[in-house]
Image (cartoon, rainbow, N blue to C red):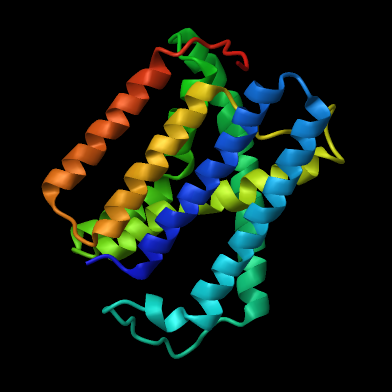
Length: 238
């Protein structure tokens, strides 16, 4: 059985997909009105960031007991303090960011040599390599028949990117970079995000898991991968 965390994460992904669809629809309806599109993107990012903050409060503070699951980990005798845990997390984050830059610089020539588009490398190659540890943890949990934990790990990462990372990038672009960033992505990419969110919500809301459902999800992933593989490198906004 899947926990409520997976269900809420699936709904959060749907919200994030809606946040990406509306700017693209606004751009198609209003034309090249960059000022209005920028204000809309910032406003949506404020809403998404607020939802993510309240999502963390719901999961970690007000309703943490709902997400404990049937498996209770044994309490260790010596627990880390908040300061020590935060310091280790900050150091690990900085190290991962540095290693990621090295990896991107190393993989770019190889990708061009094999004729891989930038979109395919960014969406699949870097995503798989960058989240290798997370994927290994999710697979290990699934092999122990802890599908609630496995799905929560997988969906939680996507929720963090959609509701936290994307708004932070938009906010940062207001002060850094040559121009502000908006949420009006190409229509094809937005459609794939929407399909992914719908599939995720259906899988999480079902509350059950079996090998056939896993096979179907792998098939969906392969189809998406083939689509991005044959996508031209230079894709312009609609």
